[in-house]
Image (cartoon, rainbow, N blue to C red):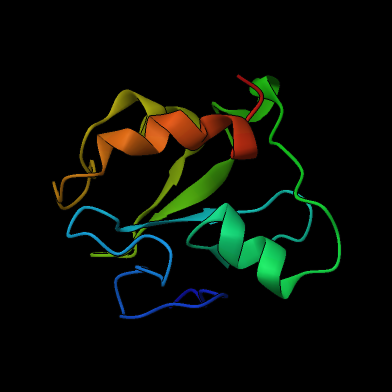
Amino acid sequence: MVYIYGATVDNETRCVHYHTELDIIAIKFKCCDKYYPCIHCHNEAETHPAEQWPANSFDHTKAILCGVCQHEMTIQSYMDHIQCPNCYAPFNSRCQLHYHYYFEV
């Protein structure tokens, strides 16, 4: 079981900032190697700035966690799918608007 830091509101990684039915992923932050539901949770809990994952790490770095089945996936796999490749739970497509907080895009 992976520990999720931040202001979570349930056991599927939803948080006080993002808590729709589709908000089911957590992101491992490059700077601290901890999973958080969102940038706001990270910034509220940590004293350092968030770092983006470099583009050359997308194919091999497992930094995304499905909150439904706890499947860890690479950044690229997450970006390529609209649902978890393991349990098929749908992801919030609006998360793409926030990629720049987490990834070099």
